[in-house]
Image (cartoon, rainbow, N blue to C red; front, side, top):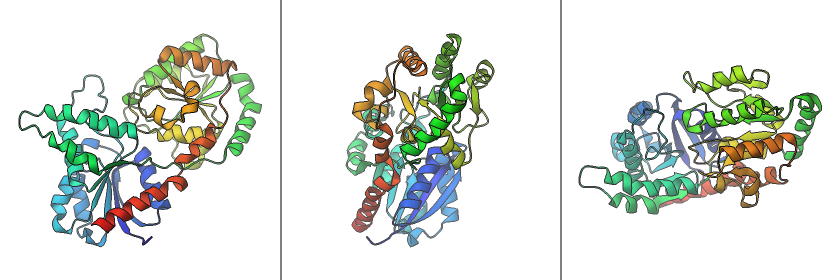
Length: 372
């Protein structure tokens, strides 16, 4: 395979976006140049990032391909670069057609339309799960019918044939036996008296629904269950008030509170944790869950979004729950030892490692360059 020179553009370089960009560049056989902007002001990134890209990279013709996260307007970029623009790939971590709104917020259709024009400008669209691709195209006709006239329903047929699904790779933590050893050491210490360690490793934002998570923990605590809590995940200046409420109400149970910038410390936390929980309203893949499960954490996840796709079918009865009442029941059973985690899940999650997935990306990049 002849190595290509690929420019990767990440306008929101943080969290799972950063992990994906870094992993792709590191593991690919192709030569990557990364252009990024800080993970803030997402609305301004969608409107203005193309201007920063063209200022920083005025001669894009030296690249064989450009791959960009969809928070960048590829239509603007293509227009600004003109004839010098290489073939374009849009990678959709999320989309603004149906992203959950916070309380009191109304949908601004301009951002969803930017997702659409980005897809039209791109030569290839990559979605991070089949769930995400399906929901995007299910939502698209209704979204287009909101337009006042000349409703461009032809867009669906224009985008669908050039779309595909490639899961984002994970930096798979150490092998399960190593993780088991770390957990055994943890149990030999504080767990015997304080209970298993429950992990939250998602963004501290409304779409991850932290209120349900903490309400379940508050109830279990009041019922006398022993457990510890580690609250990791990326946070910003403003985050849901329930985190500070939990810091007070669960003060004697919280073992960690805040984002871990060190990858080494984060992996160590995954290895020590026993249970990882999601209560999300929005999740198109679930990088944090995949990594935690690969490290040996027992996941409890809502039976919705991308989770039924990402978790192997045979583990659904244990890992997936239907509502908050069922989550509390299942979590209580785990904490009290009335049920045991299923064997083999850490090994099964290794299929999402970069070493397993990168070949599919490299082939797609080479095929697209050959067609251009």
